[in-house]
Amino acid sequence: MMGETVVVLHRAKKGEDSMGDPVWEWEPTVVENVLVRPLSSADVSDGSDALRPERAMSGYSLAFPKTYAGKPLRGARVALVERGMDGAEDALRIEGEPDVTRPCPTMWNMTARAVRSDG
Image (cartoon, rainbow, N blue to C red; front, side, top):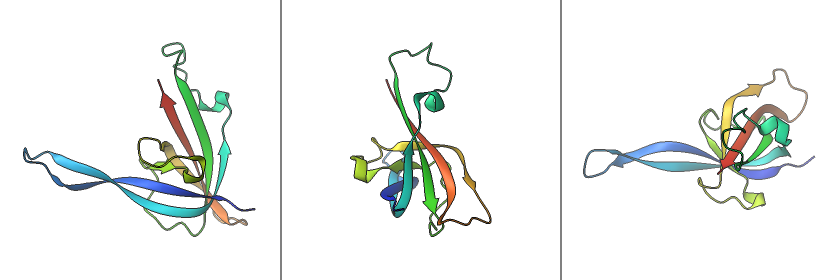
């Protein structure tokens, strides 16, 4: 099996503006060989569909390889570059805490759920 190349984005403080407020940027980390599986619409719903019926939600299950040595995924965003996502605005938000399997007999030991809500 071969996975896709994704970009993990972490928010980092890059300084302050003239008013003393923090300036934030997204730091990218390219990760190769991530298994990407779309979630069904039932898996993506967060129970608030009645409040926002016109909203479009998309979600994916991401399996990261054991070689991933980047920052923790909690609070990060993930851009699926091979599917046309090219920045933090298009990226998916990591939901919750990733699940790490130890010991793991495969090349992928960490799964995370990534979602995006439009509308």
